[in-house]
Image 1: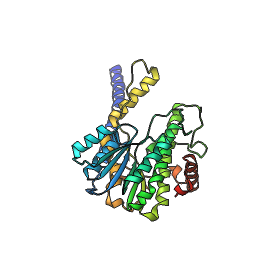
Image 2 (image 1 turned 90 degrees about the vertical axis):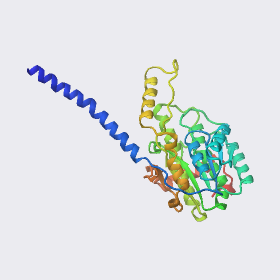
Image 3 (image 1 turned 90 degrees about the horizontal axis):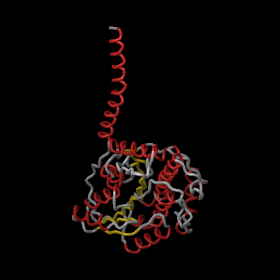
Length: 338
């Protein structure tokens, strides 16, 4: 009998040990689902023009789709051919005022060419959404001598926003939106490592830091534009879109052991807790549409609500130093500086 009760005691302990984490994860899923931000604004955008970088797929496409459905002229700026995305948006919204343009953020020349064309052909720019970015970090540097991840995620949008600031001021009230990430809380950004030198060692930990650095730089950029353009009727805000469910496939023969298990675990987490691209676009759309935010600038958002800035964005002296170094690295001309 004693053995029987001992067995039951250990069985009960095992059941509780296994059940509690599962229950906790289920509760977390419900909390996440019901706390997710959702666009409530009914604003119409007829006569307005918006640029969405990386608008051919994912969160960018869903953002462009909603803006087009509200009547906006939407410019899909992407390094990939966005013709299919354009046709799909027209088919769904019946808004034919959709334009595709090539923009490669890994090339300062491409950014300048794109901005020059926009300034020459567009009468106005009401919303600039810096959505495009890369998550995979490599040791590569571009022809501009800039770290590839930092250039696509930070330097490219930083230069682009400068070059389009005149058109944004002309179209005021207008809005700038930077899609950042909660990874901005995980960074070691300094003026010295803003552009990582070629050949620096890469590790899983360093990879996360580089991505986090680029996303912190987005917030610093957004806040800088908010400060410098506040007298011109242009607002600038940044956001965390959430964990987006975009699994990476584990190709047979390519990944082994712990690497394959890490990929599989990542996919499971994304499937269980990741947002769809449509859900991930909600905060971006909220910042682009809401009348309640017409005078709100220099803030960081998550799930359509103001969220605390990461510590790295609190120090004005540090942020100014990052801004000035970025001006230098993207080769801004004196007349292009704000």
